[in-house]
Every structure is written in C-alpha cells, then in structure tokens.
Image 1 (tube, rainbow, N blue to C red):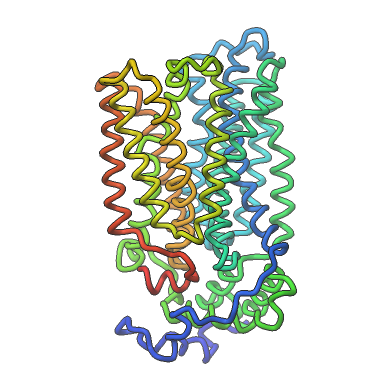
Image 2: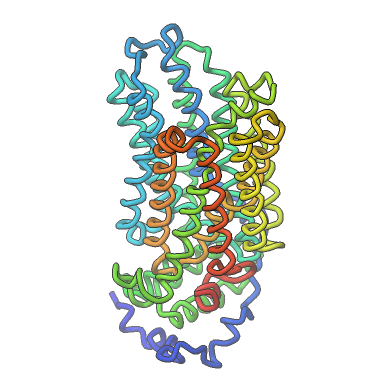
Length: 501
C-alpha cells in the first residue's frame, strides 16, 4: 500500500509561504474565501445533523429525568425498592454519576478520537448510552445503579466531544453556525422532555426505572443512524495527508462521503471541493500529527485558550447556581407553581428552548461575537440584580424574578449555544480531536467545581456576595470575549485556522 510520502503532488502543496507564515499568491483565492460553491439541499443536511444531535438530546434528557428520578427513588411508597432510604452522599452519587462518567469519557476521547474518527466515536457513545440506561433502569441495588449512571456518563462525554466535530466538519459553511447551535437546542429540548416525562412518571411505582429506560429507543436510533451516515470527509483527508492510509483511496472515499452528505445538488464539484480542502490543509501544516507539546505553542495554544476559556467562563459565571435558586426565587414572588420544583423546571426549560431557538435563527446573520457580547452583558446585569436582591432588596421579589429570567434568556443567547459552536470551529483539524476533548473536560470539570463549591461558599459568604462574585467573573469573561475571541461567521474551517489563529 502506498503511503502519503510516496505521493509527489501532496508534499508540494504546502511549500509556498510555509517558512514565513505568509500566504503565497497561489493560495490566496482559497484563503480569501473564493471557493467552489458549497451547493447543498436542506433535505440532505438534516440527517447528518440529526443523528449526532441525538447525543445532545440524550444528555439533556438525563439532566431533566434525573431531577425527577431522585424524588421517585427516595419515596418509601413509590420507589418500589427496599434501599430507598438514601443518604445525601448516595443521592449525590446518583445525580453526579453521569458527570463523573462524562469526565472519564472526555479523557478517553483525548486518546482515541483521531484514531476512531467522529462517526465511530458517536457509535460508541450510542452504545454507552444504551448500556448505561438499561443497567440503571434494571439496577437491583445502589451500586449497580451508580455503575449504570457512570457508563451513561461516558456516553455523554464521547457524544458531546464528537457531535460538534462531526456536524462542523460535514455541514455547509453557510449553515454551520445554525446547525451546531441547533445541537444546543436539542440539549435543552431533551431537558424539557426529561422534566415532562419525569413529572408524568414521578407518582408511578418504580417510576424512576421507566424514566431512565425511556431513553433507550433514542440511543438505538442514534446508533443505527450513525452506522448509516458516512465518515467525515475532513477526517479522512487528515488521515490521508498524515500518511495513515493510501492517499488515492482515502481521497476517493472522501469524495463519495461528500456526495452522500450534499446529495445531487453538489453535481460534479465534489472532487474539486475535496482537492481544495486538501490544498488548504496542506498549506496550514496539517501533515504532522499534533504532539502534546505543540498544544501549548503557536496557533494550537491560541485555539486552546479560546476554546477552553469559553467553556470555562460558560460554567464559572454561575449557571448551575442560578438555576439552583430558581424555585425559591419564584416562590418568594408568590407563584404557586414554585412549590412544585418540576413545574418550575419545565417553565425555565421552555424559556431556554425559546431563547436558544432565537440564537439558532440569528447566529449566521449576526455572528458569534455580537451574541456573546450582548448575552453576557445581560448576564452581568442579572447577576448584580440577584446579588442586590439577597443583600438589600429582599422585599422586591419582582426584581429577582426579572433577573432570573434575564439571566436564563441571555445565557441561552450566548454561552449556551455559542460556546459549543466556537469550540467546534476554532481548533485546527489535526488538533480538533484532542483540543475538543480538553475543552469538554474543562466544561464538565468546571461544572462539577461550581456545583460542589456553591453550597460552602453560600454558607461562608452569603448568596448575595456569591452572585456578586459571579457578576465580576462575568465582566472578566466580557473582556476575554472582546479581546481574544474572533468572529468566525461565514468562514470555512480552513479559513478560520489561517485568519483567526
């Protein structure tokens, strides 16, 4: 089998301007966006988005279902088990078991992502979802249940790593932002579905088993769908230029995959588009596999700062903590539904769904930076209003309600969908697998840190001061976005690497 190094045409593609970092005239048309038109049909773009996005929906469903399952499993009359009398630590293991699994899944992804490819990683995620849900639903005791939650969490870590990559690498650049943001919409949709199904089953004997078991059909559909979908053409081409297969065979396979992804509308231009991607990948230096040391140098370091910084601020600006206080805030304002935590969750889930839908519609028209700057500015205002409510304005509950709704809405316009969108776009192709795994690991790690640190901080400083601290962190995130985060609207993934890093 011929290796990449035996292909004379490829090694010469990236020589122009490589040493100086300047763009040679031969490559200017590609880098400046004058490409073969990315023709596509809406119908052929649906399934390559839908099946990976089911991984996000299953993640969101787990969040919603678990909030109701813990109520069911602790009930002496409705749990249907003899081990319902759980300590706070044991309940914590059930609720956070999937989070720990997701952390492990992110670590696994760092080592296997580029070897397996995006498609096979998503197939593995669907298997973990299925096994985890079944083990949890049929668990005879707490230990087995926690193991099931952990396995399901590994599926979350793999899916939240591979789904943004697959969608970003297969979507037409004109609608890439819409589709990746729509994945966040699916996460929120899953949360609302989890809350809704949980509320219907919470008064059923052994209802928690049905809540967790209800996710199995979607896991099966996701797995079958990913088996049917083609591999990412860009991943195939990355393997080709790194000498991990026969160049001609991988190129022809990438052309076939691109034709399947675009449908008949691509016509005869698939081969030319593949050659353009190959040329750009070669120019920007994708031939060498990224080393651990390279991650912290040059454009790889800048991409890591942008990606990890966004998902870190996504969590440490207080999103888990604000939602923790949602029920008490609405109850203090006199809303009777606030006494029912499930109904409050459904209410906020619907608001998140609507605002995420708004972000999905406008992201490719307004751009990423305006949504981030505008949304986070609203979060700053809401956090300082919440802090003031708990310190000075406790007799004005309406302010707290407005601040809560403003925070949730602004988060879903900015950090919610745009954070995941940016990390799927900004990493160079040869770093994308490992870079995204680090970003996902930072995301889940920061989520765990904020979740577990909030109660001690609240007891030490008081809720008002904690929300002020979150407000200051949100201001720092605005500075980070303004000076560090680039605009990627309308650029191909290869142009992002050249122009933004």
